[in-house]
Length: 598
Image (cartoon, helix red, strand yellow):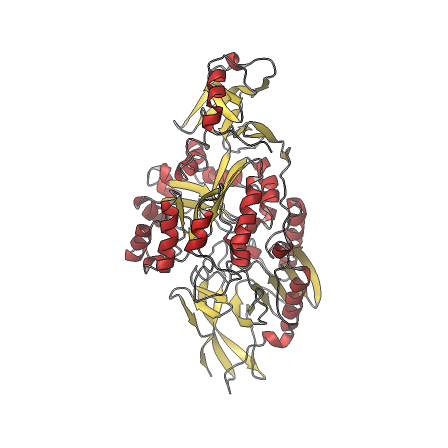
């Protein structure tokens, strides 16, 4: 792919084209231009593109047309800026950056701000560099945020690799690094942890943006201390007061609509009803799996949802274009249709339904009619990134037994309660029976296990979870286990749990579901146990079979796989599991599995 000229390099040509002294490469005329700087639609306007950037934006670009100029008649359709995703994890799509780009380009996403902290927990700085390098190869703009928290909660989990201030300082010099990824260790920031403060200081010294993650309902002094530490945005809000609090502190409230996170509707009322300045809000996806990308969309889906929630289309457009660009210091580079900016644009016939009909990135037509028209180059991923599942031994059903305290006939156990469409869990309790000294799940409570897969220790930590609705003899295992990415196994039968775990060791990572001793679905994720470099449609088809298998086992949750993958995320309340034990995230400490016995 030819390197995009900087604005300074392209300026002489842009001036010549805008003045009518040289022909444009591309002119799109007769459009309803969506101007996100003034929040207006300009009917009958045109744009002229040269060297991948907008040269002229005005009522008539006829003076920019010459021999060799490609002329496109918009036919009175809307010409909108390419969409920007302000916070996301490519790994959640189960795809490498190249395949992720291929899947979202037809949906009008032309810029992404990605935090590869998933692969960072598996492969450390090497993994971040691999993601960064493949991102820079793409025909759209993919900026990388250097992960801040590997591990996300030191002392409560063990990751494959660790990152610190030295790694952050090194990465800040890489060409595609835009800032620091979400600062998940919010208790560490509030407590003035030297390591967290040093990482933020290195980012600030580089003049780049610090991403936030404040997953707590406490908006008192702790929240204010976190804001004082430096994070410039936060995507963990779930209600209007969260968005308001962040904006009042000068942070951007990032409202997410992912595959399983539906946090836009409850917060966008800060603008639609409370009337606050919409410049403080950015729309994002956070986590979208391949099925959502293939069947439902990406940032176009978030935009449409915001409009359906009562947001003015032009305001919603700002929230996923210019607001995002401004936040990352790129307002003069992208996020709008204006002179000098990257020529990223979308033709659509309706600003509400927002069908994405044609997409240009850097002046090149990259998609039309839902089809990607350009190559998305792949990196040659090394063997070190493909052999990452190390159990250390064969696992058997006995490894998933939970021994009751001596002499107990029943126990009162702590149970992780899954909440549909939300990242937080509930800390529940359940009275569970004991058979031959082993605690058994019942009444919707099944077992969960965290299997160590980075260092081959053979470790297995067992607990209980509810909310999936599983029935019969089954188990599901995944090496996608935010954020430590050990292996999570959830099941109603210990033999099936062992079989599922061993299957993932065999294929090098992924997600599998066993029922009555037979494999019902498998999504192979050989790159770090997190991603496939196969096409999105292929991965989505396998993911769909997984969803169907989960439903056949009694699960009715929306996108339950996402809930499964977050059960080890020890920075989001209330109760989680790690390789070190059960974690009370309201206190940020390990806790006992049993409350009492009888």
